[in-house]
Image (cartoon, rainbow, N blue to C red; front, side, top):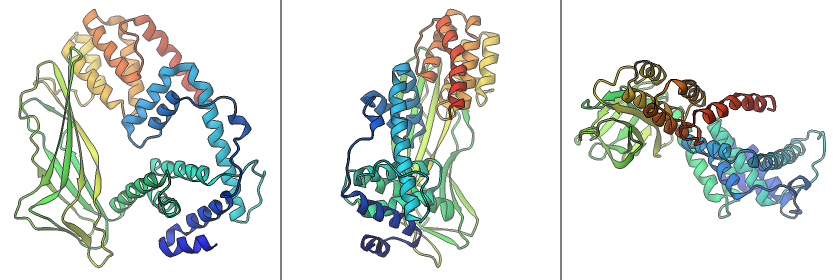
Length: 418
């Protein structure tokens, strides 16, 4: 209880339940055995599977997709390792559930077979905190991360608890107080058009928000420009620059529930792009003015990251249906337009990185049309399928079709096992 009193003096009231649970658990765990549970003594998780799992459990959707693809590439040899990992996590979860039952005075259905060491407990809490962030429960994630950070100031998990706390705090402030965003007016522009990028500030609070600017600077914007050509070549450029408004603008006042917006000028699309290519532009940013606050409230002057915006640029005349790539893909196949097929397919592969349902429809469309394709179209389709699935069967129609035939079955079996 002494440790809990120390935590209570430091943490906000919303963190008390986590502080009590963690303090009690750490005190109990410090002197306990660190022997491995019996079910983990057999199969172990190898470095390839561990790396793929780390990516799959990342907060980055692109890394999550890469992790799933890596596990699929490993095939059946990954299954025993995944089962061992799931068993270990389940075992840890059962132990922590029993611990919570004891702390809250409830009777336990079954006593845990082994108690945890401090490191194991913090590792489990880190996994719990990551899950809360992934589920969007940022207030709970913030409370847990703050409590754990006090206990683990310099240990191996300290930096990640602090990182998760910062991320959760940003999202809580953005959802409840001031939400910055950057967006594109359209999803698709043709070469020669100037993309219109808009910066917005939404005041969710019931009081006026005041943003003080230094020479019109709101923060910084970073953008990545990826050019993919029909021959398979790719070029990637990255840039970061201040997001600036008029230099004589010193402050912005935003009323309760109001949104303030301004157009940003970015030097994108000024240079001519190569023929037979499609360009992906991803924009992210950080709201970091000289100072900001909400009137008559505690100063919330923290920087806030903005969700990434994405749009594409296509050759002149190819804008039609580009915002609906599956339709464009089917039309291009019917009229045998190779460039349109490539543009629709590449946009579809990019969209599928963050949308598993769309990716499944995209792959199904490509595989279902393989028999209709000539050699040039097949070569493009093979590259797109490899990018979308993580597998590489080249231009072998039969292998792609046989693989896809088994995929729905395996997914149905996985669903039944949940």
